[in-house]
Length: 512
Ligand SMILES: [Cu+2]
Image (cartoon, rainbow, N blue to C red; front, top):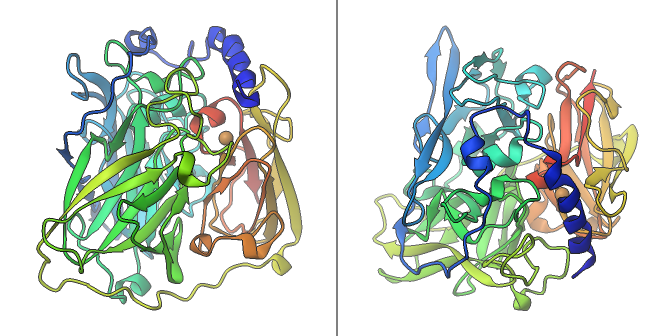
């Protein structure tokens, strides 16, 4: 047993009996008692058609576009036997529609909570003020509707997402399927010759996995009582997903939607692909890679060139998380166990995320990778008027992760930031495990890893809101804080491994 396992097993033994979910809203008694993990079986080799979330463009009146979302309970036939209880937005059984919006538009969000428990809806990566942000303080009570103030879309063209952010309920609600994409378009992106026919050559991909209980419940919703790692890949909510893609340049908008697992992405034939976008916008130019590490909450847009492939070619998008990956301890999913809290059938191996079958090209197909994309102006370290350091800590056996030894409290503001100023933040991953750091209210630039600018990967050189923090490494970013938030609706910074977040690896800050 490694150090992390021993720490967390102790944490689990202390915390699982502490009734973390008691008092967190009703309606889940039938699933909270369903904690016995099924004996895992090898995932089938069958293939199911990839689901593409429907687009939602909102309804416009008097110059304001309103996006209506309703979160409700549903169920999915994932396994033979009983259906699995799930959550989805707008009548979808798992996940929700893709909100399509344009930079510069005036929009507002309307969320109806049709669950029997409270939720919140956070617009991950969107540049909005505190009261619109949908963090843990902006509770949408069971049966109620939240209509935000209108706001101007300030974000660059990129792929964002929405998901619940209810404290100590985020893991459960995200695990059950509550989430969705937001695609922002802008003039700079529209001027480029890029694939953008949604569902044809422009494909959103949420990558995640789940473990099922003996009664086909989703096991991973229970903090520490069972693994955060799934045994079965769900790509856009579909097990063993396959998609037909045309023989041309194809754009994949990829979200690591996992609870905890990192992905080391690549293609089965080892081909290069091209990173064109980060969390908050396009890069200056495409970056060719054969592997791409994504931690939970991150988005990357990539181009895959299928124009040279024969019709009928079969290609797999895989996670290279195995012994031959070159990865080392701390990377989430590298633990060799196949069962138990830190085990999974998908751990310490290469596994398939999506099977691609190449079909005929469309008319007006894009077939060449652009040499340049957009011009970005980032804040620089020399603009920073303040530096902060966040060390990811665990105070000892039995304790969850914290920032600087201070666990999350809804009533404690941890940082005060002056509106309109630029700061440099350094996150130290600590010596126990890797993490995925996310901060609300800004898009930022990663300027150093372990103090070295050259250690920042070229593919993560754009606008970011979430990043991979390896064990024993530091990551420094520079951000300009232009969105206001007061202590009524403060912004959050947290680990996007949502089991860590729910147990206290989160802090609050105001910008004023
Ligand atoms: Cu973490």
